Structures are given as structure tokens and as C-alpha cells.
Length: 196
Length: 196
DNA sequence: TTCATAAAATACTACCTGGTATATAGCAAA
DNA sequence: TTTGCTATATACCAGGTAGTATTTTATGAA
Figure 1: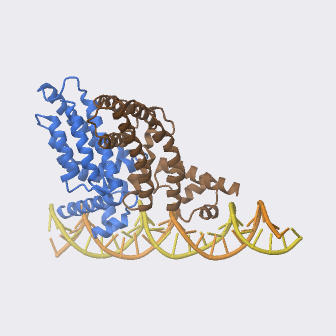
Figure 2: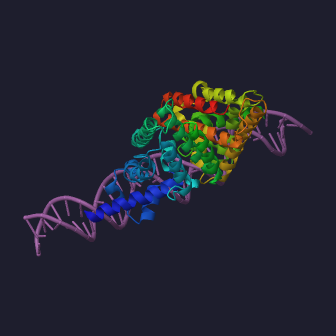
Figure 3: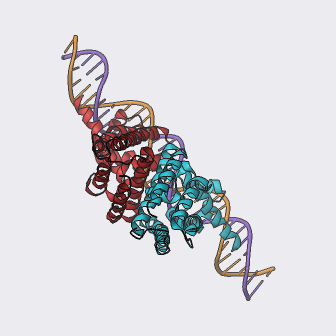
């Protein structure tokens, strides 16, 4: 009962690493069981098929991990603009879980899976909607306590900021350098200042 | 001589359609030759291998197409901020070549190929760098003629805007709805106004 | 200890993948 | 009409793919 859960966990973690680096399509089940040193029997005992494992990765690995770095920094903050900037700086520059050359795992999954797999789509949407909600709430609070200008539309700003983040991740991949991150952050700072 | 070029062209065009919709990895050579009604012999006569065809798609299909809709609207404009907004509006809302559910082909390619194929990387980088250059130049001109504020950093702004575009494309894919585009555009308008 | 079941190991398959070898048709110049 | 090259067609292959069927081992309750 205990050891079995460990096996499952190991599969998910290793599979995530591989998929984050190489993409979902190009990571085969054989690759996964080879690097996890788990047999095919064990793999298909824990997961009905590859896609079920993929969704499990989103829900059991990606979700809790990103919740820590994406969601938490935005709750219970007095100054949302400052919090957002710090969040982005952390995600892009300091976070060592997210590598510039591999982009953002959530974004990668979206890009790769969205057109054809509704299960993946749904699982990802849950993540994103939560992020949107938290950021919107933070901005709303900021409006109330005076840190954010009254005329600001929280939803619009949230969408705008999140788009920028996903996009710059893509640029980072292409450039394979954190330089672009610094340029982006500089302008993000300017933009955020206009919301005060 | 003439007909052969047509065959090659047909392969590239059909292959691009398939890849735009389904992704590069998940579109097989067999798929391509089936939908083009071209035999394998013809395919491998025109292209050394699948990847060479992929790069040819970028250079011969994507590049000229995107040049028309991404680059041209930004050259010879008096008011770059207005031009940028119109460009984005056109790309996201009116352009019928780009479909919300499939995202932006250049972005898709980047996402899917970047980590492991340097040929694709290079070909894509050429496209992007050109877009960056044109937008930066437009902003610079705007600064000179008074349409853009002096303290604006063209490169930063360009990066910021382009990131937003790529990111919102990803959101559109996830949401499978143009609604997110309108939200984004609204805030883009606000942002651009701060640069005047 | 027994025994049912959970968990994992092994061997296999049907199919798809990119790519090749080889044969044939089209076509232009001689 | 012959020749030589361009272009296309056909048949095939070796390796990889997700997934299955079957057997074996571990585990925990009685």
C-alpha cells in the first residue's frame, strides 16, 4: 500500500521531468519506464494509459508545485503591484525549478495538448483559472486600500500580465537566455507603475 | 520544371495546414502524402527528410505569410502606437488565416521544436528578430515625430508587447474563444496610451 | 500458515514511424 | 527516335510505439 504509492509517485515525477524537457509526444512510455527503472507491468497497473498519466502529472505534480510559486505569493498581500513584480522576478530569474530553455511547463502542456485532448485542457484550465482569480482578487484588494488606481480593470490587467509571462517564456526558449527576461521585467515595472 | 515546383509547393502548403492544426510531431509523413495525394517517392525527392521539409515550411510558407501581416503594417507608419494596436487587432480578431483554437503558428513551432532542433530554432529566430527590429524602428520614429514619449525604451516596449501577443495566443488556445482576445486588446490600448 | 489480492515482471503484438531501394514514367535536347 | 535526366510510383524495412496477456512475487488479514 505504501510502497505502491511510492512507485506511482516516482513514475509521475520522472515522467514530468522528461516531458518538461522533451515534450509529451516525444517522451515515450518506454523512455519513462527506462529512466524510472519500473517495468511496463507496474506502469500500466498504475495508469490506464499514457494520457491518464499525463493528466495525473498535471493534477498531482504540476498543480501543487505551481500553487506554491504562482498562487501563494499573491494571497494576503497589501500591495499587489509590488507582489506581482516580485512574483514575476522570482519565476523568471530565481526559481530554479523552471529553466529558461524549457519554458513554463503549464504553457508547454497547453501548447502541445490543447487542440486535441480535452482532458488535458480541463486540467490545465483549472490551474489557470485559479491563478487568474487570485491575481484579480489581489488587484481588487489593492484598489480598496489605495495601492491600485480606481479606474484599473482587474481582469484586463490580470490577463495582460499573464499573457506577457507566458509569452516571454516562449521568447526565453527561443533565445535560450535569461537576458530577454530582464528586458521584459524592466518594462513590466514601468507598466505596473501606471496602475498605481 | 513547372509542375515539379507545384508538387513541392502543394506538399509544403498541405503539410503546413496539418502541422498548424495538429502539431509537427503528431503529423506524420504518411499523413502528409495521404492528404496531398503525393507519393512517398515524390516527397523524398523534394525533401531529404521530414525536418528539412519543416524548415522549408518556415522559410517558404510561414515567413512570407507572416511578413505580410506582421511586418508590413509596421513600416512607414507615422503613429506607431496606433499601428501596433491595429496590427494586434487585425491579427487576433480579423485575420482568418490565424485561428484561435490553433494559436500562432510561429509560436507553436517555437514551443514544439526549440528545445531540440537548432535548424528550426534559427529559422524561427530570423522571423522574430525581423519583427522585433521593425517594431523597434517604428517606435523610434514615433519618438522623433512626437507620437511616442521620449523616455520610452523601444526595445523593452517591443519585447513587452510581443510577449503579450504570444501569451494571449496561448490563452486563446486554452479557452478556445476569442473573448480573451478582446479583454487583452482593451488593456493593450490602456498600456499603449501610457507611452504617448 | 494459508490464501486472496495487490503489485510488479516478462514477453509479446499489431501498428505506425521515418526512411530507403528500386523501378518506372515524363520530358527535353541530340 | 534515342538518350539522359527529372520526377514520381511502389514495395519494403528496421526500429519504435502504446498497449495487452500472462505469469510471478509481495503483502497483509484470517
